[in-house]
Length: 70
Image 1: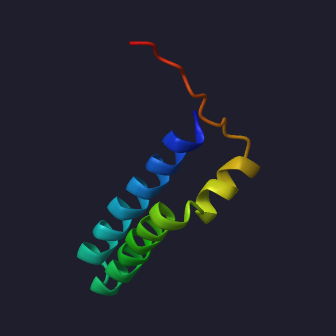
Image 2: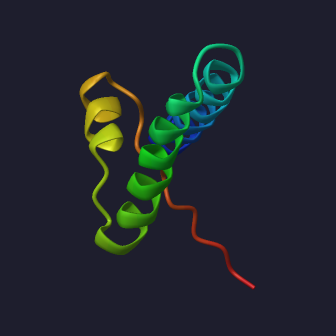
């Protein structure tokens, strides 16, 4: 699995888990969902994401750019 796929898996899992926790346990869990969203937005502008750093340390593969000719 690549870092990009891992990041999508983690972000999607966090969002789904916190929505379930907010529904069944306490609505305050939605603040964590907001934290995930803010982190995704800031990483789009800064090109830095702590989860990518962690996934690299865990050994996930980097994306390989594929040159296409048209």
